[in-house]
Length: 127
Image (cartoon, rainbow, N blue to C red; front, top):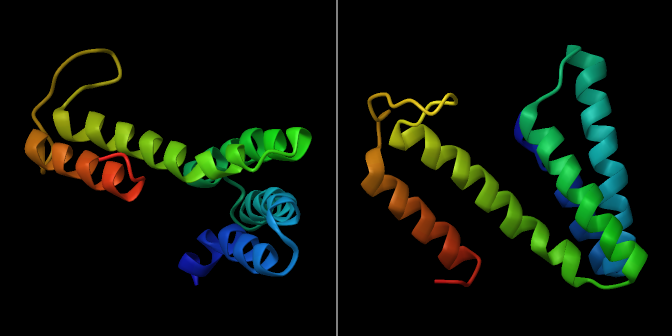
């Protein structure tokens, strides 16, 4: 059920896109993301980081798409989200701490982190 809840805005985006087009789908995704964050807070009295980051990206790039009537901005959203999550993952696997210190690599190590970058770049068509 959590998986469905996490993908709720994306699911509504694609359904709306097929029926009404990119601009209506973008507006629906923005509204659905607000509903998702608000619903999660109402039920659990806390926010989930992934929901907040996704909401911020959808509002900024979706808003630019709607204001400028240019579909390019909303198309950047998956790439930017993947790059942000990879950046966090890379920091965790290479052992960097928030204060700039070093700790032992956690689990996967640098080679696995490079592999994840290759996956993200190939998904985005940049590799």
